[in-house]
Length: 239
Image 1: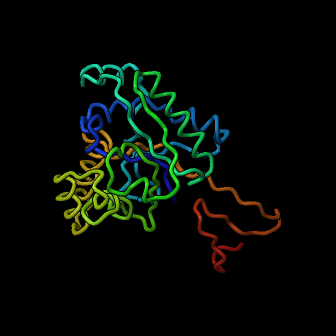
Image 2 (image 1 turned 135 degrees about the vertical axis):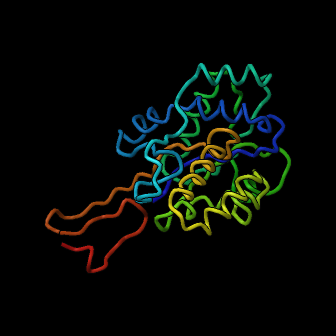
């Protein structure tokens, strides 16, 4: 499974204020993107988590609500002055990527955010350590059914942390507990607190939608296509 998202560089002069990043997450109408670009054939996930997390799934969680009014309030409170926020983008990273970025830039503009798309040629020009980094594209996958599979990117040793885009010491400590803990309710509490930080209080990413994967096959083939990039031809996946 894969979720499309953007990453914030909290060391950018404007994005250093978490209120600006919170405003950016609440200015996005994710369902409108899913409906316009995917004909409703994918979905907005419950934040950075998947249903197959089973008992670790926080079913009452959701991505930040689309609330332009709250986004404007947060920007006013932050004192944002309209300074440009760069959005470094690598074309064709995923299907409909550029169109998605353009829609989000317009939704951000509607609440008063001046986001400027900057096309780049390679990942070094996006996550390399250079002045002027702002927002960039990313995606997150979970290769086994537990939150640590996806959250490691935002802890020490993970790509976002190591690229110097974002760090949070409380999240680092919680990840240690989540990775080593064995008591279900304690791990669920750690997971909820991590999502509260990474998606609400000190946002590192902006969840957009779950990836859309389509497979064509003959109707008489009793084979189940996966909702990920894996093509499963094991005997157990037939019939």
